[in-house]
Length: 341
Image (tube, rainbow, N blue to C red; front, side, top):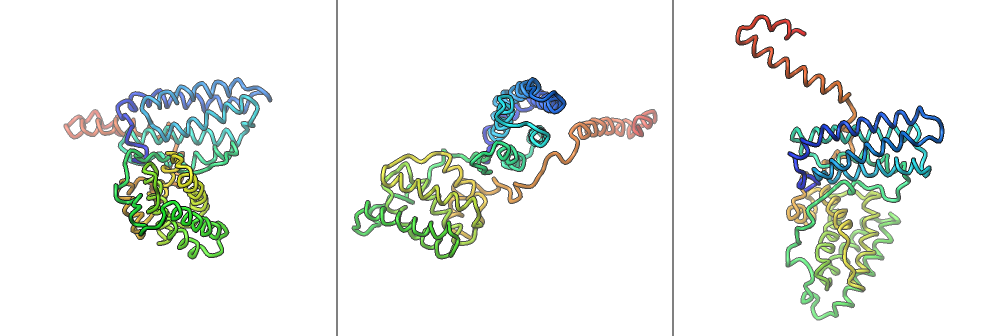
């Protein structure tokens, strides 16, 4: 879960020196770009080449979430080369912070950290803002196990409609959901709108004729249930996601359209953040093993707070210190000078 399950730690340990060096060279070239004459893009090209080398090494270790961030950085630099985006002081600072964060994050992974790449969102978001991306969502850095199938008994139970026409039941429920959604998006009466959407989604889950959409309707009901029980906040992310649920429900119920993995991933991300006060969300969290996959403070800046080179030197000195102390304990007084140094 959370983007760590596919990582080859052994391959990562082999690749980290190369990744660290490539990212460092990319940062140097970005600094040189700022000192270059106006219109020059040679240093941007060099930075992109070094970053691409790091990107290739990351693919070997299959660090999915980090690949999203490095690919975004590479896209911005490439747009700068083409003159589509101005890579100025602010852009270079955001790029360098992101690349430093990647290096620190990978070293933490190698040291045994279980934090998923979603903790890099505070460095990913500024890059998206630079590019004026339409979608800025932390779920881009979240990689749950979509191979898990929902329980067989949760959806598609046409006999639960008490003789009603399934198609009419689904259509009526979807219209009710849309009515609740309009109130939810306006924000006039969130509690009332959520109750309407909750009742409508329960009916759509029962009436859903498409087996391929069982997970979608179950996760959607869990999201509405989480909002109903205040297990999730009503914010811009939940409003956008509810609007997407409405569009997908219409396409699935009317045209049997498939559900994109990206939507399921977004649903699971927000449910991973939910509290257990929602019965349906709690059941989903247990079934998909979501507990602990999204830290409550995932937006906190964790990296770039220290000088990585200084930390490495301190660790090297600590290793020498330990060896000297062991010799002193065994009676080698000559080591006291090395120990003191």
